[in-house]
Image (cartoon, rainbow, N blue to C red; front, side):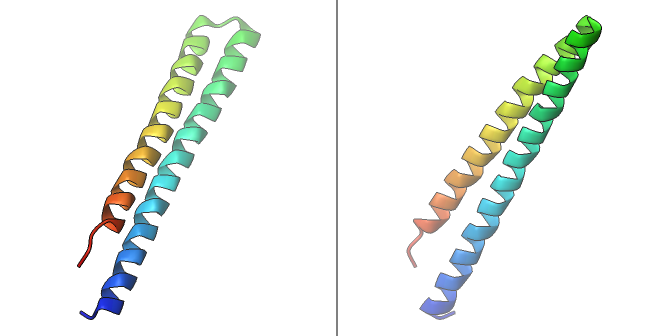
Length: 84
């Protein structure tokens, strides 16, 4: 492989890793959004189980989104730091 093709390959790899992290972050945000819906429904109906499920979904969705985006961003930064 030439230097130019290696550079393009690494740029593509970084883009793919960043895209995976972004998708993971969006999944986490979606999970948190459904948690907000469950929480609101639980409050409206005075259903403690639904409230607990909503709170847990909000927390886990936020943690999942933040963790996946952070991990994949760190991997992308590591890939960019390779010198051939």
